[in-house]
Length: 489
Image (cartoon, rainbow, N blue to C red):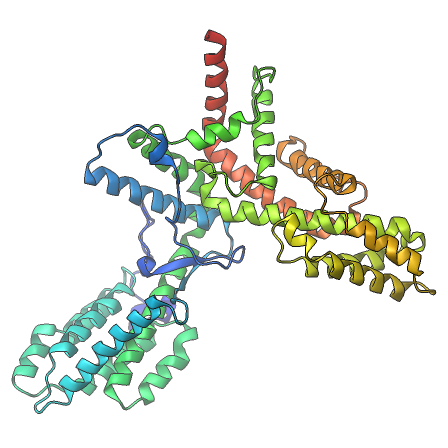
């Protein structure tokens, strides 16, 4: 939504926009919507599974309702700021229940009942405006919530025209012009809506049925609230991103003051990478352990609870784990094929084509078992691509050899796949631990996947760096306090 879309009389009012947010952030329409992320299309709420296992691992502690609500609000705001900071395409979107679900059936039934009652009341003689007045009051509040703080005269105009006491008097005297108020509401919406809603507003202006008009008004107002929320986020994004790390640090510190033993899973995650002989005497040695812990995310077992400090990015880390698996399989197949069809070893276009075809075939896999079911497809595609590039088709013997080799790559102990994964892991580890500004070289044998590896590295480095900025102090304290405890025993 663009605030400059407001009425012309408002354009010359106070130039100052809304004040910057304080420690909490309130977004119009937030309560009914979830963030949309290009990284993951699944719908989720900001509070969903935010810190699983926290209460179960902590000793019983009696908290007041105010403390609980304050902590919940603080973590919800922290999650929202986090999403804005790590997801460049973050925005709210309308959530609809899935088709044929109980939720949708109940929702549709309630909505139908509401509109049926309104229609029957307006059809009475004289019309009964009881439900309509409730609806009009709600529309008024929605319109006011969409205005910016400096739209003072506009707010005054809405309050003057949609004066509910005056409207109730008109109802009592049977002189209410309901269509007049409908037209006024639509005219206000037209002045403050974003261009994306212009077509819907035009349809409302042409609609003659009162029920259809007010249905459309409410639906469009809901979309406009989303527009306003997304506009607010976009307007404040530079400020929010610049202050997001400090904000998250402070909010998490506040949370720990209420629930101090809330890092049990995080402790376990870090300590899996420490042995009695692990040196932790310097910060470089501590950073090395933390780096290995981050690397574990690339092979994360879904049955393990996720560390509390990483839970807001759980879906992103698991997506990268799956992407790492897919790249490992694609690279392994490429190495096997060009090793056994030597005339294609220097054919870069062939490697690119085969890589793209394999990645398309395995685009949905999340485990070696998933990949195993697709090995016949991969083999057939590899042989087809080879035959397109060589003058003489592959012999039956070579075809059978490729089939045998490719069908072995999902074996838990497959040496070439393990080597490829180790190279990818080392590559990612170097990017998150290196203090040099020099670019890290693509590992040998993986240059055909340079584009995909570079994209994976950017996402992985961005998330890890951000997480380390927010929680690195906690990680270091956990490791150093553990060593101190061990030494005193």
